[in-house]
Amino acid sequence: METFDDLVGKRVNLSNPGSGTRGTMEIIMAEKGWTQDSFKLAAELKVSEQSQALCDNKVDVILVNVGHPSGVIKEATTSCDTKIIPVTGPVIDKLMAENDFYAPAIIKGGLYNGNDNDVKTFGNSATMVTSAKVDDEVVYQMVKAVFDNFKNFKRLHPAFANLDPKTMITDGLSAPLHDGAVRYYKEKGWM
Image (cartoon, rainbow, N blue to C red; front, side):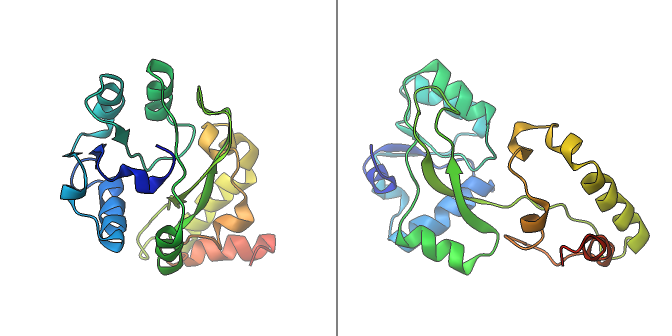
């Protein structure tokens, strides 16, 4: 397999119903005119089952919508010979254009065993959500605590390493900003 379109005719794990990966895949499939019959097998394994199924040759392809580095991908790439393929093209471009919460992404080369080159793909933005009823001061203090200690925050997980506070409030927003957060961002001159 070299491209995302090579999935047709393969044994593909579409992920379990109700998962974000499955929901995204269903949108892509509809746009491409694919159905479950487009695949030799359309499995519905949970994320925790995917790597083993791939390495046991029960599926040819697993799909994972996840921040990187990912334990699931690391498990697959260290347990068996795997290749991460790009997920790009006009359908993906349209998906990103129509949904602000999707954005281009790159899986850095060398992050996973056997995958030495950067791989272009897309992903969705993680969002911290609170009720609009939460007091502005509470949200302000929480946002302040994170961003005033951002270097420490970024060390909590490798997936946070490339976060930029300025783009976090403009790119891929899937919900309106809370007034308490807006107050902090304005104080910092980010808005």
